[in-house]
Image (cartoon, rainbow, N blue to C red; front, top):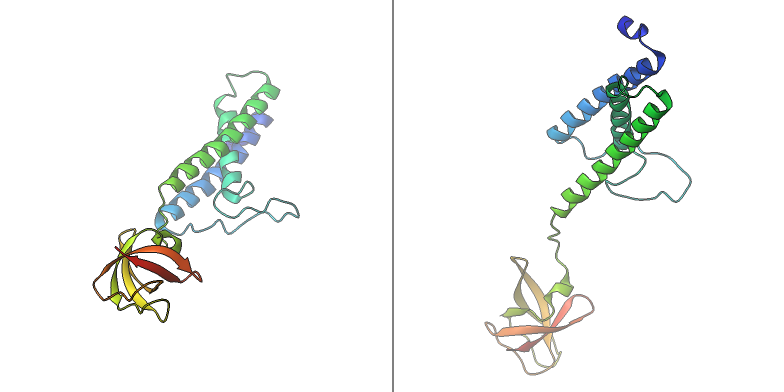
Length: 187
């Protein structure tokens, strides 16, 4: 680091921030591609209303590194182009914040690619299914139907408000009782 000692103090400061931030960023990137990046493992400990779960946390190690990368490398890159050092620091701060904002935009776009395939019984309303086990008449007992939701078949308990429905009959889900029993009618 003897080379850095001959530099102007502001430029030297930018280098002292850029080198470790770049090393940590490189390490984070490698760990991400190896699949070891489930979480930063570090989060800010504040007593405030900053509670936000998920990848879009304002105070995280990843966002700090993104800010420091933008800040330090902008300061190094524009050191000779912007003679006013205060303006240089302001521009570097702005680019650092921009790096964090761009990271948020990228993460938001990536989240749009995720698909929630979890089954919710409410998705069966007005869908058609096939009786798997006979359904007794007028809610005297329950049978079962096979119904396909999001490309996946589900065997669910079902009752009817009218006459009994035999195995193999097509039915339509009209209501849901107790959040787990389907009320069906013949088609």
